Length: 169
Image (cartoon, rainbow, N blue to C red; front, side, top):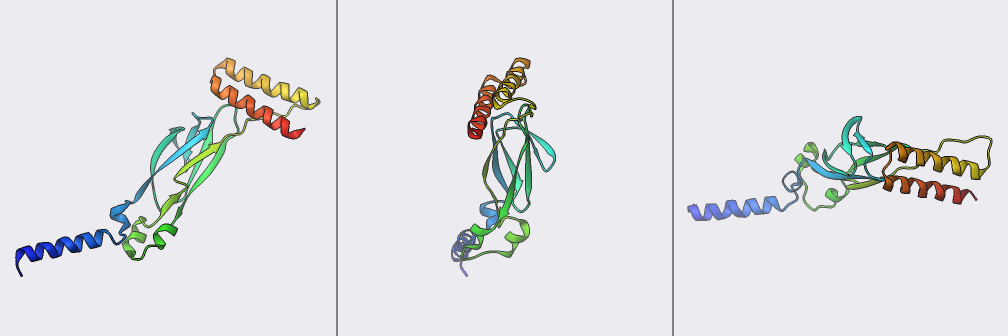
């Protein structure tokens, strides 16, 4: 066989192989995901390991479940899951068994998550709703004055407190 024919055959074979759905080559074993919170700057842990403050991007294995826990002063903690899904890969015409074994046949969903943190509402007993509302806003003001909240976070917190009390009426 002539070298040029052999080269052309190998080239065509490589191109055909790379376009048949081999996810190990096209997507890799890890996926970049984005974690955001409302409000931002919440401390994040993934599967119990602290990874930083929101928003951030991190690469995670495609075939594992990841729990994201968020915490911020003045807010209740929030959590969410990244779950592996092979739905997109299963729809392909040609698939390779090695993709499943190496974890490249899956995608983490969602690729970008936003966790909305709720205000930590201390229960004020013995008063009416107006007294409770006032106590919650005073608590938010104290967090702002102590430096535990930024002005933007304070505004977000007060807006959430007001929205909560408006729905109770």
